[in-house]
Image 1: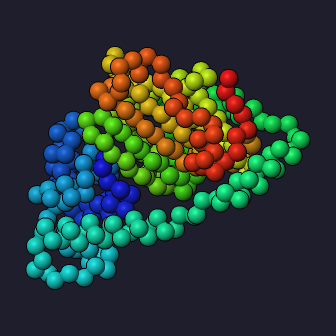
Image 2: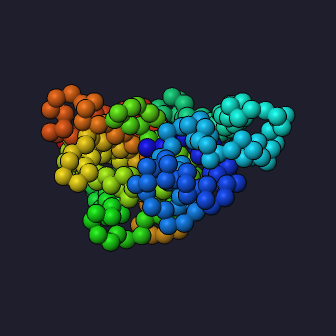
Image 3: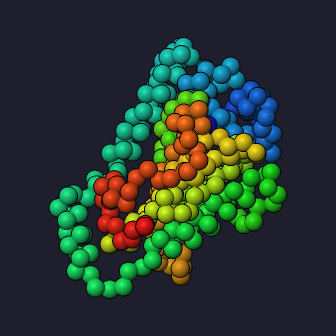
Length: 307
């Protein structure tokens, strides 16, 4: 699983664009241990980014020459003496991407204040209109999402429908936490990147996500503005092996231009390997938070409950 932040991934993508085709293909073979057969140059670059453990590890590869890193930094306006050694160039690149990440975080809107939350709650109490059945919406969404995603697994035959960025808002965010042989939290931004990262789980890592849609495995909440949260738990499989469990929270917003269509605004995905679980945890995959936890974390008001 990729260990690159979004600025690092975009930066490395641009940097790899400066390499010739032979170096790209050789680099892909090395990083993936020849287990991935790219169809073209872009497919190889995508595999390199997904399977690199860190930006530093990627830049230290022999095929990523000192001159390439220097040229990339120059295109980004980072002026460095031409005689700078490769390890120093790598540090300059990491510092530049770290700065870009901080700038990105500064652009993130501030959360809704507690006073606004109380106002939302008061409005909810006064609202006499009929409530939407968000639990049913959550069930239907999960059936659709996981059937579509899992169908992209090459072991299951041809995909049932087209997977792609069209199912996400353009500024969607994916926060991916995994605890398997290592622990990591990585954020991905943008419909294209998020779509490709989720696709790689089933298409290249051959995972199968099996959601538990009973009352313990599925919980839903919503804000007065129409943002719907769907939390779902389940098990993770590869072939006949159960690898662990997952918890996933979706933020959905209705598309105003297409009738009865919702798009994904954000995703929090947590995958925990079997070796990191307490005994018996795999037997009953369940969401470990309550709808009120969704409220606190996403500044929302619960509109449905699970009994």
